[in-house]
Image (cartoon, rainbow, N blue to C red; front, side, top):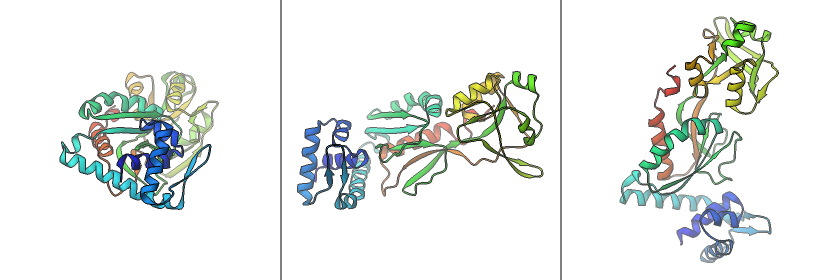
Length: 298
């Protein structure tokens, strides 16, 4: 059985498009289609339904997919074990990550990572939208949300400490709230979908819905709106640590911390064998960020 044919089949299952899958592997649409024909002939079954717009897996294709993935993962692990080991993964590592975290914290470390693994190619997509990593053909997704898909595995990369902030200018003009309940008297800048804030107080947990005139779907935009004095907001320390150090932002409500169990996770599909390129990424960035990430050293 041809491994290149298997790789193409797995990519087709993710993209539902023969031409797109072939392009990702450096194949023309005609060659890709021929490869799939040969794989089906060797197995004696039809693996995909073809239409003019997309393809879908047959019942046999669905049954065959996890086995194909396991074969490819096992081959990668075997090749690594007789080469230079886990230090020399190869191929293309496709990553999806939140735009702000990717730009601020993955990119500064990317040169060191790629120097450590010179046979590895990296293809990143930075977006604040939660993408389907299997459908998109991604090897790893960086997320700070709760893992809901049981077919995926999550490995913690770093902490995601969240605090309440305001600019000195806002505090000078409108005052500083001394308790969470006083937030109802203030403008609050919110990240889209996160307007319920929960606090741990001496009298128990407090949950409230905040309001304000500005919200955005990007963490850096929310941070910058807070710097401009548009209101009080919640910031992750990884996105606001430089502004907190410079004094552009000030942490408030320190005695009533937010209730939050978020973290930065590396998420990847569940298989019996973890691909060397995925393991290399996770191990490198777990060590790079460490138990006490640099953004928490305020």
